[in-house]
Amino acid sequence: MNTLRKERIKAAFKYTWPFYIISALIIGFGLNFIFSITHKTPAYKTLTVFVSGIVKDLKAFKKDTLAKYEDKELKSVTYIEADPSEGTYYTKLSVAGYSSADVLIIPVSKLENLNLSAFALELEDSLINEYCPGYTFYKQEEINYGIKLDKSIIEEYVYLPSEDCYMFLNATSVNLGEYSKKQIKEHDVALCVAKDWGM
Amino acid sequence: MFYSVDVSDEYKKAKSKFLRHSLIFSLIFALIIIGDVLLVYFASEDFTVNLIISIILTIIFAWGAIYYFVNVYGEINTRYRFFKGFESGIKPIEEIVFLKKEDELHYVNGLYVYRLYVKYIENLNEKEKIIYTLEPNLKYENGDKLTITTYQRILIQAEKHS
Image 1 (cartoon, each protein chain N blue to C red):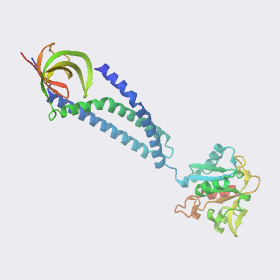
Image 2 (image 1 turned 180 degrees about the vertical axis):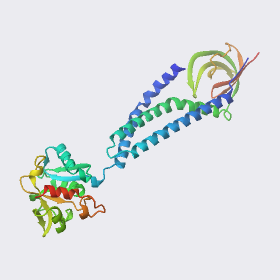
Image 3 (image 1 turned 45 degrees about the horizontal axis):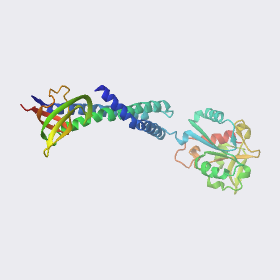
Image 4 (image 1 turned 30 degrees about the vertical axis):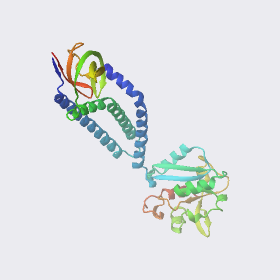
């Protein structure tokens, strides 16, 4: 009986082996999906920076940024890089930058064609006084939107264009403290970045 | 010489085994689901370890389940269904002449059985056919005339004519 059973098991394996592979794949992807959904890092613990340039050392850039803002409960840093000389620059800016970045670094030559009120936070006087007093700003229709970037701070991580660059805070970000348009107002890491990287 | 399978006893055994296996499988399945839910629930933002444990556990269970359903549960279930359907099933009674019994085991309807070659008369013509028996030591010889009852071609009862 045992021999017959072994033969049956062998014969069955010939047509059931794909199920072993398929089940492993489904389980792997399925559980990974469930874990990712249930334990997704909240937006207020994530900082996303749109960088107009080429990142040299992404690992160090992320590590140093995380270490610097550890006290702000920051768990993850994401950089969206877009080379301003590429034809797809504006597409990347509008698709990835506007929708998900907290801070956007844009060279001055690219700002002429942009309607800043569509995505950037209007820098009120109280915000300027608290986070960036005496800094240089980029204005559009007499409203302050951009803060001049101190390129020396991030130059060791990123190849930036030779011209001046400005930082813009995304109006939809949840990391804007009391200036956020969302209900969460306790997290101001984007403002701290503007404060530290601006000049 | 009279041979008979105790169908009611075999049905009880098959049913009890079927229920036992179903219960054990359901319990293990429930444990795995509970384990996975707990691993998801108690995972931190860095959930890599929990994810790996959960994937390994679930894959082992899934592979075990495939093997079990194809090779073990299928056999138990078919055997149980076979005896369960016996009461209401068609059980032809025939007059046959016993020819021989093979010693090689075969798998039919969830049962491990031996082949029997028998001769019978249909429309005044002598014909041969194969039926099966559960009994390894069937004490009939070539040429014995028997009245048999079969169910799904498996010998349930046989009585030798004098």
